[in-house]
Structures are given as structure tokens and as C-alpha cells.
Image (tube, rainbow, N blue to C red; front, side, top):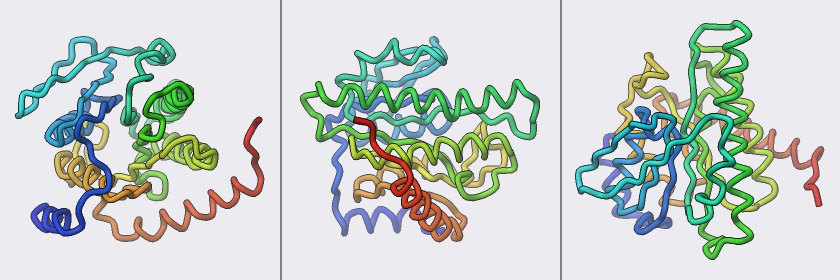
Length: 249
């Protein structure tokens, strides 16, 4: 795997396409492993962070003493924050749940509600704010669909629900309402993924670096096959959706 030092050298050579300085970035799942890593990384890059968390007593500390605004939210009540999204530049949808090997009905509903439907509600809410936004051209959505879109995650319901939101994002991208990036992340160590091998801090750094280069599909993984299977899958799904669906007037 390419070292962090090598990535930093490449970053200096290529320069930056997307600047985070001063950008208002809201992150769901902010109190989780990847959420905290993204909060720390983007704070270093001088972004204004809004931590969206279902844990009302969550607290965040960053090394440069940046101020982190914490906003609690409840699953199914995403619409309560519609007005707050008006001034957000980048919405990172990072929340999720992994029921591991469970396959009972309750686990099915929970997996799809958290990983698929809640994420899609956030997307729709954010897109609604764009026509009335002063910075409409700068608006972006990032969705953590994970490598489970194309590879096994040793958790069937996690894979199914993540693939569902992955396809819905591909479908929504056809409308070109704003830039929508996918985060296709390999196994990093977290509570959701006990089998992870990468560090969350490295993955967060790589996400920011690749976003600055302008990539819409941000792949961070140790599995080389993902760099082949995901683009092929995405091309054919996008083509299929384009041919057999239409944008509502």
C-alpha cells in the first residue's frame, strides 16, 4: 500500500482542485470512527465543521482548537434540519449500521432504514436547498457507500443496503443537480467493521486528498480489484438508468 508520505508528495506536485478553507461541511455519523476522522482531517484543512450526530452528548476535540458545531438529529426526522442545510456547502453522509450476520426481519428493516432510506432523505433535503442558495455552484454531497457496492463485506444485509443506496446515488447523479461524490471505502478498523485493516485517519486523509483532485468516485482500499470492478459496474448501471428512466418535470 502506498505510504502516507508518498501521497503527500503527490499532493504537493499535483496541487488542489477543491479547497476546503472556509467551506461549511456537515457530517452525519460524526461521532463514529470515520466521522471523527473526517472531522479531524477537514478541520486541519480549515473547513467549518458541523457534526450531525444521533448522540446528543457527543463532544469533539481537534488539535488546532477549531470550533465544531454539534447538531443532534433523529432517524426519520431529517426534515427538521432542512433550514439548517441551506447554509451548508458540503454534506457528507457517513452514518450507517452493520448488523453483521443477522438476517431477522428487524435487522432487515434497520439496515435499510439507516443505510439506504435515511441517506436518501438527506440527499433530497439537501437538493431542495440548492435553488434558493447563494452558493449553489459550490454545493456538494458525499455519500459513503463503501466497497460493499461491489465486494463482500461478510455481512449480507450491510452489502444489500449499501448497494441499494449506491444505485440510488447513481440514479440521482443523472439529474446533475449538484456534484455528488461517492466514497468507496475498503476495510478500515471501526465498530462497524471489526475486520478492518486500514486506519480511519489515513482513509480520511486520502478522501480529502482525492476530493481535492476533483474525483467523483473516491476509492480508498487495499483491494486492487475494486479499482477495476467498481468503475465497470458504475458505467453499466449508469448507462442502464439513463436509458430506462427519465427526469420528472
